[in-house]
Amino acid sequence: MTAVIELPRGARDQVLVFALDMPPEQARFLRDEPGALAQVLGLETQGLQPDMEQVEIFPVSDLEELGLLGYLHDGLGVSEDDLSAQGMALDGISGWVLILRARAFDATLQHSDVRLVPAQSLHLVARLGEIKTDWSAQGLIPSAAAQPSFDRSPRAARNRARRIGATLFAAVMLLLCLLIWVIAT
Image 1: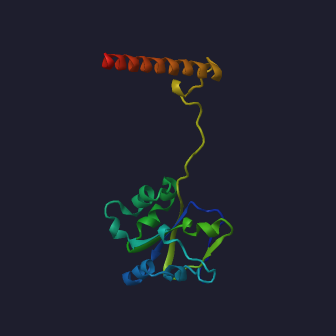
Image 2 (image 1 turned 135 degrees about the vertical axis):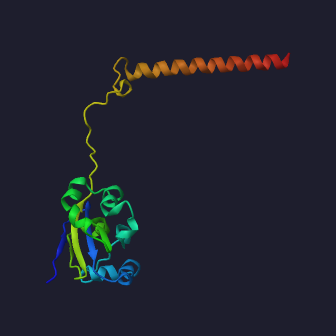
Image 3 (image 1 turned 90 degrees about the vertical axis):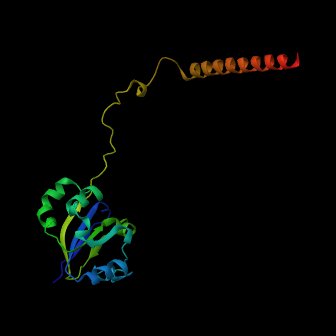
């Protein structure tokens, strides 16, 4: 019996790592042939095609010194907590790997869940999460330039800017008149 993998609605930050138990030619076929990956993930019954920009299929040996753990952390932004919990299983992968980001199903995940029914040659090794960006502000900005200035009203600031502009205009016009007078004489 094949296990069903649920990607819940709105789950953009998940990364699924599969070990591929197949010859290299078949792994390349999954990567290069449109529709092949959808078939082995059991998506053809749902009429879904993953966005191949969010899918990677490659031999782990291609990562050389970086390794799979380094690539997942540095390249895909997987949290260190997830990697430390799954590190032993991920370190054990030596052949071809399939990295599937939930973003491959963005359009569908906005409205419903996605159910994967992977073929027996795909073994889910880890379900990881990407590091989420913290968009919250952390207190006040310490720079004096970032602090609000309440010493004058907006009307006073506009008047000051007009006076400065008028002074510069008068100076330029005076210089222009002097230049014309020098040329004319």
